[in-house]
Length: 225
Ligand SMILES: Cc1cc2nc3c(=O)[nH]c(=O)nc-3n(C[C@H](O)[C@H](O)[C@H](O)COP(=O)(O)O)c2cc1C
Image 1 (tube, rainbow, N blue to C red):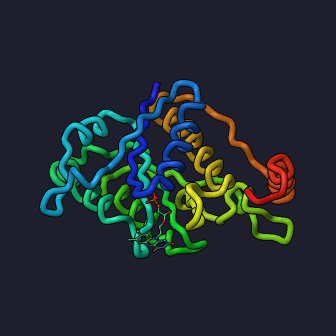
Image 2 (cartoon, rainbow, N blue to C red):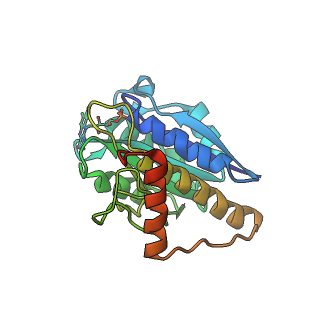
């Protein structure tokens, strides 16, 4: 059994939808379980995040999925404060070395500079000596027959992205399901690394992937995602 943490910040709940979806993906894999941890501003004092109970819980996990909203083109200040709190003593002791890691973010604009946030999260994981897992789906919504409901409709690989319209409470179905698939992927890879459980790699050609996305769109009817 592998234990994975999904640690996230979400101001208005949009990013939490992705966190829940990643947890669902992790829990869909036999022998893997997910725990959700929310990073809250109440735990920041004089600019420093402090919650030893939460940090100790992360110490005992085999993998950590990191996610936060993109604010002003980078990771939210609350989440950055949490990342910095890992410096002493966890970075000094290489306490999280060889834990498996992945990341996700959400913002309002189609681009919104979300990649900067994923870069921050992945560099953090690398500094901690963790093993980063990315999105493995081909890109969706990049041709005339594409839709918001497509898997990987934002064409992201470093981590999962969600784009939430400013007047709606969640990212598109495509983003939510892509996050779920990333959750399942990190669980499978963690099982392989920690428990030696072999797995078969699913490979799709681009025509097959597009056909699946068309079927998703038709099933969801209307293609609005
Ligand atoms: C302080 C602040 C800065 C923001 N900066 C960006 C940004 O750089 N790019 C973007 O696309 N959206 C930006 N937004 C919009 C949020 O990313 C968007 O509302 C997102 O859905 C918030 O997720 P949450 O509900 O999980 O906090 C910003 C919102 C706030 C409050």
